Image (cartoon, rainbow, N blue to C red; front, side, top):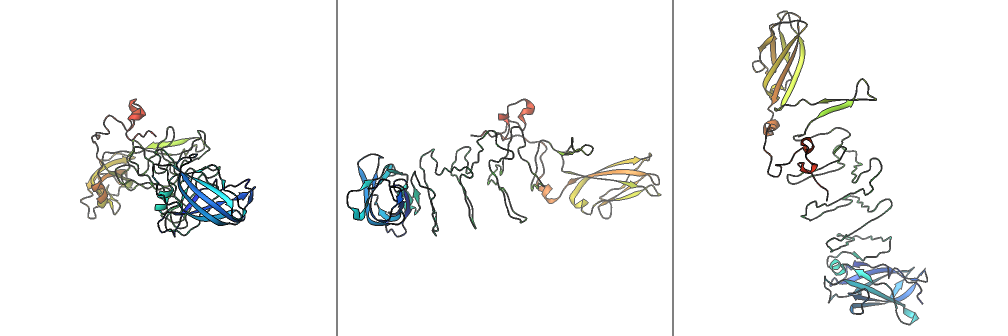
Length: 408
């Protein structure tokens, strides 16, 4: 009679019943087709559990008689009890079906479907899907917990694997988190979320992980990285390119440590074909530099005014004076600390209208600088000894680099 009965054999979809007093009932949903046509009417269903895909020893049994099937769809409550269930036993479900008013025996659907963790899922009041599943499946409920829970206890197993020509797995939320991943592993190189481009020649600007914030507010974040300990919030590396690139302004709240630095711009004289680079000026101190040019008055003197914040920001001043267009024994007549406003100094010893180039440096002594002095020399920690910030500069292999990470 049943030339083709599918979905009940292919689909093993259980939802924990909210009305089950002992939390051992399941809502089983499936479809029945007869000769390729969705069935309608009353059908009897039998459900048997086995610990083997082909064995004959029945572990549990339940039966549902006179189940209404409309357009091939049915839903039925079943209760196995799980009196003999053990987490070490792999269980399979077998479905048998017959038309209620048609008489005759049951037709056994094949193959049996493997159940990975149904009883545990029920006790957690979550849904479980067996290894095979007819798609698409729509789960639409108002449950406060997890609508769909898939558990794989194998040490190297995968809970969910999604594959699509466009998107493999997509998450969406109206007012929460679109997707959340976590890992409780304590192993080296443990990863909560991993993105990998497997093709060795991906297209331009391809990204293993892409973060984009469509908001127009001033405090939105495209990608967030943080670390509670002394590790790194964000780590980037590249074999022959940039470890990180920012298109726009960059703000660092804290100390920026680097092996070197420069500006790089389109060359002012040939911007289409050349770059121009200059190195940063470095110092063992947290030094600020101020300079300018003044014209001496009739007495061969000049008063130089500095910014109003100068003394509050700086200490330990140094001066440089250079005459332009002629020689004169110019000198600092009044130092900054001696001036009434502590933000001026006086040049003297020159001739009228002589041009003088001046430079003043100061060492920062604001609150943040006083608390975060940069040590000029420091010993490497035990874990850093024998390693280098730039091993290639010492003809050493990259594996001896401090912070070098070998991907697992």
